[in-house]
Amino acid sequence: MGNFGPKHLTGLLWLFSLIFFLLILLLMIKKKGNYGTKYDRKVILFASLFIWGLEVIKTIYIFRSDDFSGNGNYPAFMMPFHICSMALYAFPILASNHQKFRDFVKPFAFAVMLLMTSIILAIPASSGIMGSEPNWHFTYINILPFQSFLYHGTLVFVPLYMVLSGFYRPRISDVWKAFVVLIVVAVFAFALNKALGTTDFMTLEYGNGNPFKSLLYESYPLYILLLFSVSTGGTAVVMMIGDILATLNEKNRKLANQKTLLRT
Image (cartoon, rainbow, N blue to C red; front, side, top):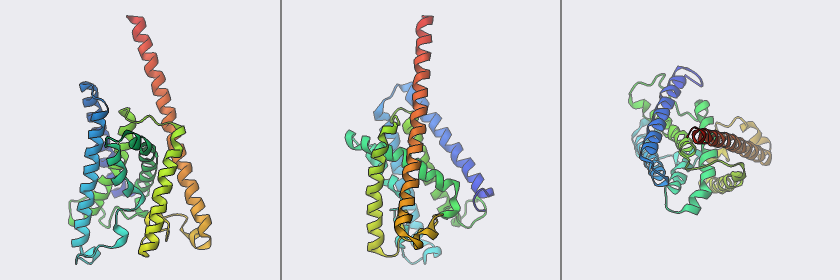
């Protein structure tokens, strides 16, 4: 039931099938209607409302479930301030009218969200998002696993849609913007961990689910340096791949247009 077990692989299958279906459908509608950025922002706004709705479902479940005392107890570590929770705040910015602000957040929403979410979906046991049920039956105990997979699936869908729709053109030169936003949210998470004393937002306090956890207790500065290196390095790689693919796509379009002109 753990990583790459039947539930994990089945979950990835139905999740990415849904993502690809929505991408094809929404991109076809965009192309047929010749819609522009306003349409893209509406799609992302809907995605933002969707993950906020999933967050509400999670909150209600936590308040009522025996897994969390079932007496209105809401543990601090479940608050929406983990790295993937940042989509709750970044995606509405992408859908807003503030062009300069959303342009600055785009690299973070694309590269960092795609990187971190892909890692979590690849090794879900580290974050416990699959739950204890061995399958995807529609049972009460599977509410959080369904919520988690749909939530993280949306965090994959939006970055892919951003690029495929032309809403964002990845450029390696934009990496610094992603770094700045990442550092800001990391400082916020660090301060919140210290203030609450029982949380591990962005694995900065206890390293729960982090493969480098043992290093945290040996040398915290080295642990932070390693986290920063992996995060920034991974973000740069995602951005570089996006940049290369976008460049190749642009060249193919130019060649196709040239061939069309020659035929006419």
